[in-house]
Image 1 (tube, each protein chain N blue to C red):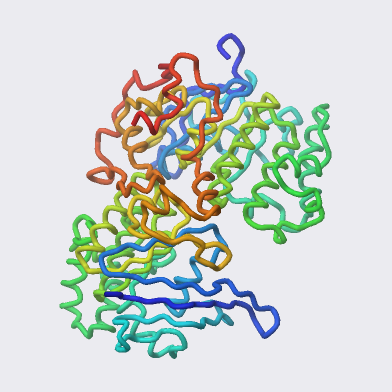
Image 2: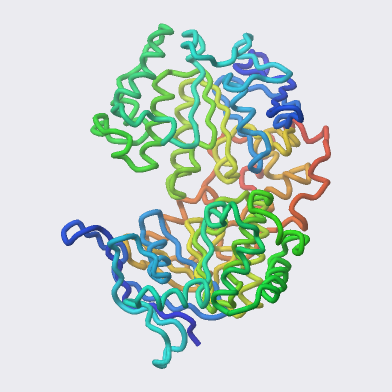
Length: 284
Length: 286
């Protein structure tokens, strides 16, 4: 990945919301993702990970900094159809109920993804193929979203994104709506399909145990900044930033030992806010 | 000493005679003071409906049969199955407290925290306005909400998610219940906040002589604070026992499947960098 150009390059991204006194949700975030690589963005709710994702796909206009997809800036989404080239960026949202059209059959919604791929001159498979790929029966093609369970709906949303043969997948909490027993397998499936097709993936999750499973690299966000980043096993084995440490210590492990996870003394110690340069881009 | 005894509980849902589904198919469980009884299972396994049946809050058309006895098992206890709505009102929120997944849905957005805490105490315990207010502040201190006196004047939106769940727990404890039902109490929270709530629940069970029923799909949470664990599937308890036994020596194949499905139990899918392969199994090194 070193000599190749990254698929996505984000540099000093700032996202702000609100009127006179703007709220800075993302405060100078930078990262790259290479082809076939999964970068996970983790952190508590409100840390700015979703705002980062929205800025990456152009749903939010950056206040400062830049987002480059294949060396070209991603223009803000408007009412018009996106240029065909940009349909290679696909998004999977947290809530399939709001991202699927309730009045269109599942098969046709996936076909919309395939159409986007063909418009770019990329060959793609039929809807039934993608349903099988995400572990659903092709017979579900003729169903409407309401006839499926929550987990099946999210798999459909993933199938639709994949059918467009994306080059960059942005997945914002794609598995948190799923049953605990299905989360690991869907995450594994997403990684497999992404790596197999050589796409880059920005995977956002607050579930750290799933991130450990499937991300090549991880970036830990706190209050709008990346406080620690690097190869997932490295960050896991030896966190440097106090926030990363607290985050990892707070995961309860299902080992039957009855050990309470470490709880921070107060809800947010001030040490979590400090910048530690060595904690960034860790390879060892 | 049993605080709540469930015997052969069945729950049926659905409208009319035909379209009925039995979602709980005969389960028995004892809740004991000081102990946290975990109830695990996938969604649709009937774990939440068991909690709702205890509270008499089944959806319209839902019926419970079997027996749920609150209090002593020697006949002086109170049978909850088949009890009328009026009788239930004296139990719910009074002798049985409850905490749900989403504190923003269980707290009233337009009423101050102080009033929401005081309401139950004035209705059930007949406290005066002033006395209820004093106790409300004590309760907020108990669940470790900072500046209790000031917090009483505030509205739910002025608190973080974790603080809101602490407030919901304070409301559940307001009338000194014997039993606390917690249905996915930390599922909506971040891990660091979750850890704080787990500590609180663990401490409260002992401090307040509570028998706790913890319903959750998160086996990590279960392993952290439950004393006893029951695993539900398809409306039946397929395995139950002490925490150690269920987690470390599961007998039922389904329990084993559930434990193996946890991301924690699996190896990373990422090819480990050649440098150090020990990093591949962080739990062992941590």
